[in-house]
Length: 310
Image 1: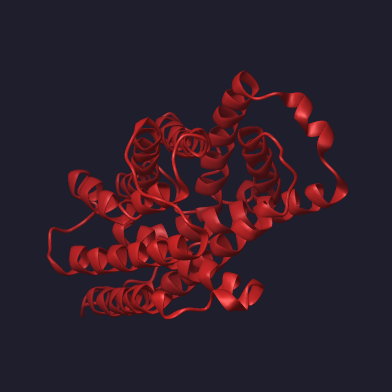
Image 2 (image 1 turned 90 degrees about the vertical axis):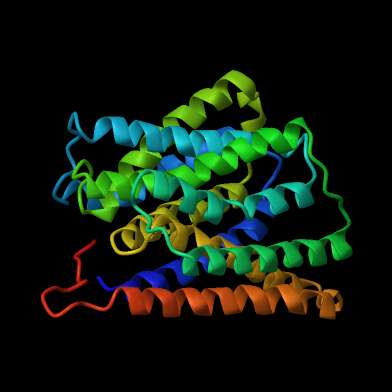
């Protein structure tokens, strides 16, 4: 797989994640952590035929600790997000989330899966400013304010967990602890993460609220499990073979851009010039990222960047 293929996959990732938020908004008020655990279970069922036949499916003593840490990262992020949703403003959370790519880059330097250079951090900073501008534009439409309290502090810990997930994946691959199969890595990290999130949900949420689920909720849950969980995490793991954690997480800057386009389709009157600066900065940052990786991944005379992934 080439860097260009990985970037195209991450563009699809951004579109799927951006479209998942309106889908979640259509669901009934169900326990969020238990709902996420069910999404991950459905995702694992969808990945099973692909992962089971792949080389490296069986858990090994070298891989298990890495998968557990990856599962803890998923549980930490989603647990923090759901708790903070009741104690922090949406604008504050959106503002904090733009730190994830830069956090991933910093953590990647510590684990030696990123190279110390100025170009990628500059691109990430440009994307972060653009994403912040989009958050402010949304605040003008929906209202909201930025603050920093306990809810924001907990969500920032969740952002650290989110940033650490691709770093662990890349480190595990480089260290030979994880298999090359993206399906296998996705299956086990989602499976262990789902177990941990489900345990949190059982301890903190009323299971009886699932009695309010209707058939449309079930259909949306299957869609979210297969596309917004299985496919998106598979695309991320697939890109990990050839991209760095900072480059992968940078596509999170496109998510508010996709959400903005969906908002324009649903509420055309929300179209305003306030969205333009952030949109341009995010698009320029992604274009620079594509150009940066295209240049840095050109094969040398004695080697090739081609890598196989399922």
